[in-house]
Length: 107
Image (cartoon, rainbow, N blue to C red; front, top):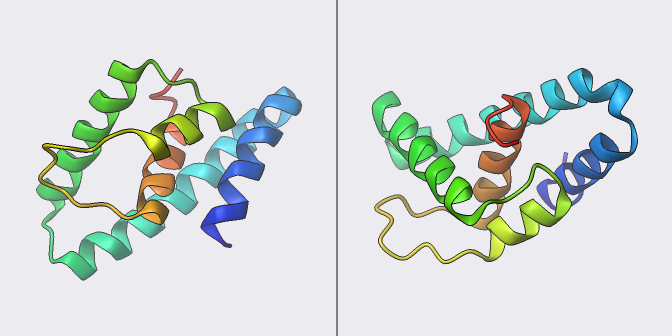
């Protein structure tokens, strides 16, 4: 799964096929958490660090009033991250968005 193609395609599919929403959300969540775990492990973060980062990113997404779709992903990818103590590359930001959409935390 390539982060650049998979997540945007799943988000578009989520809009187009609402009857498959549960399956698509589980795929988004699984993909997102796997990428986040690998990145956290590589950075030497504790579980608490990872959870804090996810809460910080969820707060940022809610402040920007982003929606759980492709446009929301683009908005999140372009959002400024000044002041964040957790440096995230683009693929991890996509994974964070996917995880939060998959868990239903972005509505």
